[in-house]
Image (cartoon, rainbow, N blue to C red; front, side, top):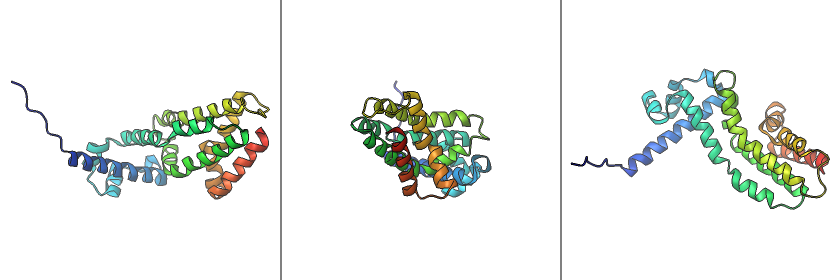
Length: 203
């Protein structure tokens, strides 16, 4: 005799997904504001308006939640389309303009995600690995951009590896954070400065 099939309610699944998304959103905000080490599951539950046991059931432990934040950031990056658009450009100036605009959008729109992971580095046992994982695709896109720049004229006056390092220095998360957070520049001004610096150095 076959066992009865388990009924799955679409409405219940949708509600659970909304609850999980809210928990991750509030956790990201708290991690970015206070730092991972100063946030408890009870804090996350209170911010999301749910019970602590709901947080555990829906998103897991605090470490699990940080893992989910990293995964969501990777999904939301849209890197595949961005890279395809970048490789279709035929002048160095256009490539650098697209990099400045695209990385600005990514860093601005995912600022709290970046901060939540960055502030976990000193206290999370796998914080450094999480940051490396989170930025691996980012680095790969900039490396691909460097290789593409060396197929165009005029070519950068550096090796491909050095060009990739410079792109990471300018357009990676630390470059944007230094200008916007530590020095108080607007995102528009930071984008303009980074773009001009890249063009002047590589073109």
